[in-house]
Length: 623
Image 1 (tube, helix red, strand yellow):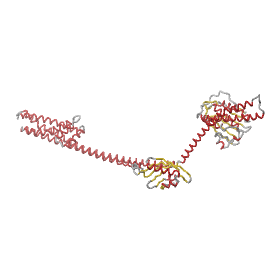
Image 2: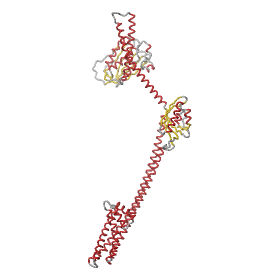
Image 3: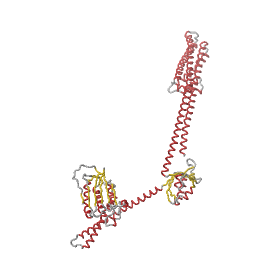
C-alpha cells in the first residue's frame, strides 16, 4: 500500500508539474520582456538627453560666434559633455572584453538615471549585432563623429576669437559650418530615435507573439503530457491489477495465505487461504491471536512461537518461523514469513504495533526432507555394508580356497583313497565350498561396481564372437540341467559399444539364470537383432516364470524371490550386477515374464555402424 501511495503521489506531481513549469516560464518571459522594454525605454531616454545636449551645444556655439562671450563657450562645452560621455560609454562597450566600469561611468556622466545604466549595458551587449540595435549603433557612431567635428569646429572658432579675430574670412567660413553641422546632428538624432521607437514597437510585438506562442505550446504540451500521465497511470493500475492477479494465482498454487496481527487489539486477520491453513472456514476472518496459540498451534511449539513473535516485534527485520498445528488430530507444518509493523513510516520510535506476513503449508517439504535424510542414511548404511562385505569376502577367500583345494586333493588321492561314504561327504563339502566361493565372488564383484566409475570404457565390440563364446562356456551347464540351448545368431556382422569382458559376464549371468530356473527338457533361446540405432539381445527361457510382484523385486540385492528354499544355488546378486553393468555400458535391461510360461530378458546396447560383411554366415546351432 505504501508503494502504491508513493506511485500515486509521483504521478500526481508529474501531472501538476507541467503546469507549474508553464507558469514559471511565462513568469520568466514576462520578466525578460519587461527588462527588455525597460532597456529600450532607457535608450530612448538616453537618446533624448543626447539630442538635447547636442542641440544645446549648437545653440550655445551659435551664441558664442555672435557674442564672443566666454560664458557662452563654457555653456557650449557643458552641453557637449553629454554626447561625449555617451560616446565614451559606447567605445567602452565595443572593446574586447567590454570595459563595464568605463561604460557605466560614461552613461552616468551622460545624465542617465543610475537604475537605467545596467539595462542600457545589457541591451547593448546582447543585441548589438541584431538588426534594430545594429542600425541604432551605426547611427550613434555616425552622430558621434559629427559631435567630434562640432567640438573641433568650436575649438577653431574659440582660438580665433581668443586672438581678437572678429570678422576674418576664415572666421566667417567657420561660422557658416555651424548651422549645417547642427542640422546633420539633428537628422542623426531623429533617425536614431525613430530606429529605437520602431525597435521598441517590434520588441513589444515579438514579446507578445512569443508569449502567446509559448503559452499555447506549453498549454498543448501540458495537455498532451497530462494525457500521457493519465494513460501511464492507467497502465500502472492495470499492471497492479495484473500483479495482484498473478499474486493470487501464485498464492493459490503455493497454498499461501496472508495474516495481519494487531498488537493493540490482539486481533489477527486471516484471508481465506490462511484461515483454511488453520482449519477454519475458507473465508476472511478475524480471531483472537491467543485462541490460535491455545487451540490450534501444537502445544510443544506454542511457547517457542510466542517467544519468536516477541522477538520479531522488537526488531524490524523480516523473519521466518516454522511450527506445527494440530487439525482434527493430524499434525501439519506451517511456515510464517513475517515482519513487524510500526506506527510511523520508518519505525523510528522502535515500538511495533503489529505484524504482517504470509503463511504456507510446508508439510510436504518437511516429509520430503525427512525422506531424503532417511535415504541418505540408508545409502550410507548400504555403503558401509558393501565395504564390510568386501573386506570380509577378501578375508574368507584364502581359507576357503584352502578348504576347496585340500578337498579336491583328498578326492584324487590314489595312495590313500576315500571310501564311498567319505567320497560322498567330501563331495558335499566341495559343492558347499564352491557355492560359497561363487557367493564371495559375486559380493566382490558388486562391491567393485559400487566403488568403480560411473561408466565403463566403451569401444566397438563384434557381437557374434562374444555370443558364441558365452554359449560355449555355458553348454556344459545346459547339458547337466537337461536344457536345450537354441541360438539364432545374425548373418550380418553386428557391433555394439560395450566392454567385451563385462558384456560376456552379462550374457553368462542371463544364460545361467535361464538354465538354472528352467524345467527339465526346457529350452533357452538366444537371439539378437538390429533395432535402428540399437541392438537387442534376447534370452528367453521356458521356466516357471515370475509374478508381477516378483518382477518388481527382481533387482534387489540378496533377494532370491523364494528360490533360497529350493535346491537351486545362487546368491541373489547376479541380476543386480548384470543390470548395473548394462547401465554402465549405456544400455538397458528389460524383463517380461509370464507365470507358468517363462521369462524373457532383453539387453539393448548402442549399435556401431555396419561394415561390409567379410565373414562366413553362421547357421543356427542347438544342443
